[in-house]
Length: 245
Length: 329
Image 1: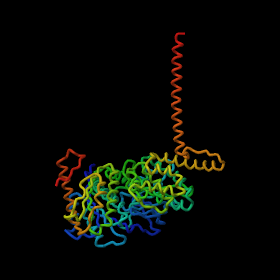
Image 2: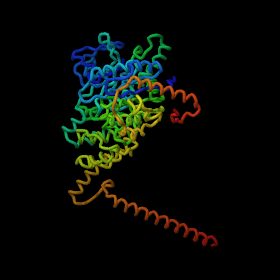
Image 3: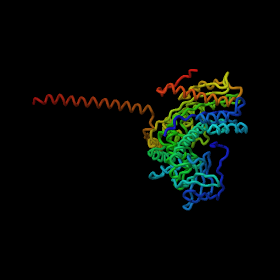
Image 4: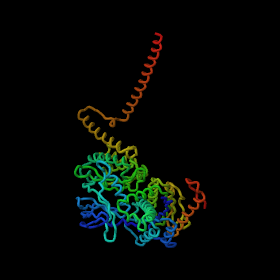
């Protein structure tokens, strides 16, 4: 069974979008393009903004992914858990589809007797370990995120540590919104290692609006550009390219 | 869909609730909730065969993979670190279908409260037990993964260490999915999250540190090694294990067995030291020796080897010349 490359957008934000279209609509579009969106809401101690929380959940639901609201200090573990969970979810979807093929319309892990589930799970586990993964991280850098950016950086480095222990290949790319001049700014192009973030992140300027919707649109475009690049260079698998635009 | 809410746990069934399996039709009466986490809850339950532990979960996949791990582990001979597996089934709670599995109920205090209650001298003994169980587990091709005092019980009777949460068990060679920062070498900047025996052994060292410092601390810099070693040296009970802990934290042990041997040697050699003090006859073990002494001993060994070679060659030469002289006769 070949799961291809799993594509995910990881959105890290702390509240409501206030510019551009509805981010949930953008997320639905991503899902149609085969990209899963996971959202992590980073909150200060006890302040959970209901409207923000609803939006976070909504984006993940339309994006076919996982959402989670956490306090800043739990971020590292949550980031890796959410990514893993979404991966397994996608793979399980693929495996369930295969099961339907074999077992008919109600083929799913749940429909199997408990004794048989272990074998299916073994396939899911194996795929989760070996599948290639592309993750585009979208970080909200509006003013309220300033005190949380250091933790976000730590969490992303930790994520790359976790995912790079897998057998499959990983590619990461990092975008921030709002950018210096544009709504969205590319911080890091596709790379298997996130270490270079450590140098860029502390220098980030925060402030301004929160254009979550447009940022998701930009992320989808960036995935598309990568696909095209791959098309041109199908024979150089191990190489990574500088963005030419 | 799969959205999660960490703030509430969906499993809060009152004692007396009866769980009936959809597939095997076995009945379990819940007696007490033993613990709850993000993925589910564990209850003490009454079955036809006596008390059991019953784990309900949110996701069928999670429950299925945990029960298949437990099944694999319980098949192994001898004393198992984990609880033995009984069965897996689905429970129809109203319209919901909740997957669960049933395992042996292990009674006893958790490791941290046991050691804080009975004294730090228990820590080393229990860790030595743990290491021999880990050796078995590693030989079967698995690591424990999420090793921490909360996941370890000291079973009564017998004071034997057991684990209760198989959720973190990972096949060797794969990546560790479940971990707790304080016990994770990745967090301390001291290694990858690849499942290999040395990952568990790092956690074992951290379990020892946690037993000495019940309030876990946070890392101060990217490389946590100096901070951890300072903590080891500052604690009266821990500092005698400095050599072993240093090696385990640095990833120097390849097997649990090696680490166990070193721990055992330290414990027994320390007793010898005490004896030596009372009889005023200093009889130091190899590990107790100072570095300079060992270096001198090594120099002496080199010297002896050189002497032996010279001696051998001269004997051979003598034999050769003697042989040559003796041939004409």
